[in-house]
Length: 309
Ligand SMILES: [Zn+2]
Image (tube, rainbow, N blue to C red; front, side, top):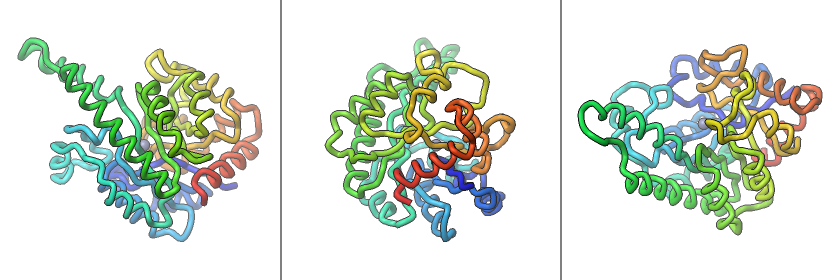
């Protein structure tokens, strides 16, 4: 059997000590993977990693919405060194030429992760206001700053929709707390979307969001979170995973790990890695009431269609 981890980050700093071993463990378990970039450096390293393997390792390149703002830093992604510290002070502008050149490599199967993440700076705002609360009155981002950041994310996303169209590659979309704006932007740019326009990764939206995105032609990936005890996907607003997965047609579902984050049960809490995607496929099969083999064959076929591999 051949599995697909459609969205993972083995190029991240969390794998610096054993990257080759992690990829080999995945390939030996029959797991093919797409390493997804989040900004310039992690996009370039995703391509570099993919080029080392004859088959089974691919890349996506793009600018994650969180990286359009200043001060985003994640040690698992960029490590704790000086380079990462330097990075925290810059928000990246989307550089069309840079990403177009990277994406011209045949191992690049998607543009992203790109999209909208309004939850990120809602979190940041509450952290900042907590920190500042004792020192000064008020604090946090002003409404105007929040609007500027949202605007910047929307511009970077629209630029990537157009790049994906130009290169005839699918989009790898990240969306948190912003499905209304996401669906609006995709609808107004629908002339740039082909018949199989891409993937909404780690989907946390509602049934209603899903049906609108299905109508636009999108597929959905699910990861380790679906193996956890039932809960609402997005702070009470999001869909119930079981219900949403049952409603999405088999030919629009893919599996992912989003490693190093969100390891599925029974590995929950540990560093995630691509071979654990098998646990996700098992859970999807259970929810769709089909055999693991049937689920997996369909998912692999879906991956071939969307990534053209
Ligand atoms: Zn990701």
